[in-house]
Image (tube, rainbow, N blue to C red; front, side):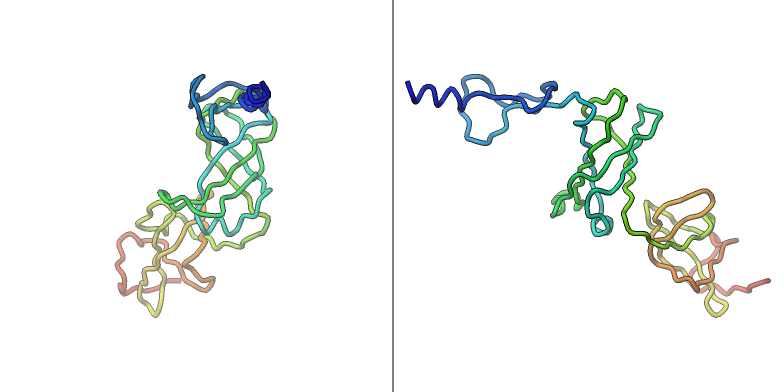
Length: 200
């Protein structure tokens, strides 16, 4: 009887939050090892929501946790806010990205599990970025692009990393120096080493 009572206590599953069952991984009567997940539960409280996102190694090095976050969902017109709850210490084998968990601040938005969001994380430290006109960029793909600079009356093609775009400016995270002279007009028709004449 003592063994039966002990087993009954160990066989009881109690939810740690009010919510709904999203996935059932085992059925009544099955035997599983200790610590094996049985049910995935999604909380329905407005303080329970977590958004998971992948970040690059460069961004991971700038984030320590507790940073402020802005989130935009396609299904909601308003911008939601949150904070970085946890950061993975290793990268994902398939994507190479580091997983970050964002805890949403309480909101009246009717959230459901599985929604996609665009996430903006604001590091505590400030970074000064150089900016160039958007039309100076050539061969842009994702965050990579090229610009032409003027060196000794010749066009030199340089690879740059674009942090973000704002209006008619592109803010560059790497690849440029403050002293570089950027060629804006006609850059699409230049090749590396083309002779140029600067007209002031």
